Length: 350
Ligand code: DAH
Image (tube, rainbow, N blue to C red; front, side):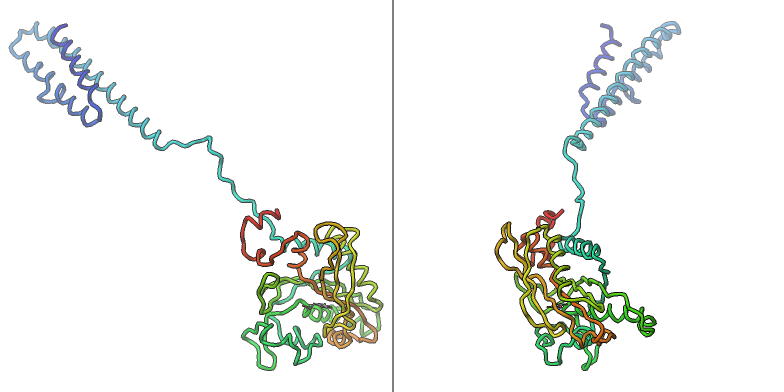
């Protein structure tokens, strides 16, 4: 091997031993730099004859090009290696299962609400919404609830700013004020017909929504949900209430042999009044009487506060707890679960 071949070989070896781009540039300088060995060889030609210069120069150039080629190859190899390390560090494991986006869904109480609206809607009931901040008049007085009624005490009712001492504002303690609000609107709408002695279309409405009381345990929450029902006309009887509510419960609970019991009770705004109890014949709750709703024939004073003549108009009302209906339907035993927002609980209803 001649001197130039071994120069190329030692350059190639040194390049191969250079582990980093910086090492490689140092190695390059030793051969191709200003004081490098190839440059030295060029300088060494000064004494040679023209012919010798020609052949020696050509040979040195070949060697130089070989060294440059080795350098370029090594540079590329180092760059490739660096890229490989980088890719490995940033590697994505495409076989990992993707992170799923939760689908979301309706809250169980909302599902109950939708069901109730659907069932009563199919029986010709409208759905009405009303304010959660109520006046004393709509929540109590118009519903024939006397001044000294215990429901008015500070212990049950959340009072809020904005009213007067005589007519305080409060968070509605039940959805029953919607009986008055809706009926008054209805009567207003049909005033002309009424004044002309023509028949008024019946009032048939449910009014679901949030209600509030100072109360908190496994079956009571300071905020809870109720659904009011009202049917008023010239010829509406307790029998209609029984038919309607039985059909509703059997559809709602999907249980044809479910039986109802009307247990005498008291509410200021109905006379007579009854608690409605249901009994399943099968399933985990079979045989027990379960209270689901208050009800009764609308009190004449309340009919009057609706703007109607109690001698002519009669009807019934009911008010049930949506949270309780949901608990019974799904077998939930603690009301607070509905309001904790625990996704493990809520996702079971989807
Ligand atoms: N408002 C009553 C309550 O919260 C429930 C109720 C009872 C509503 C009888 C009615 C009714 O409409 O007729 O306890």
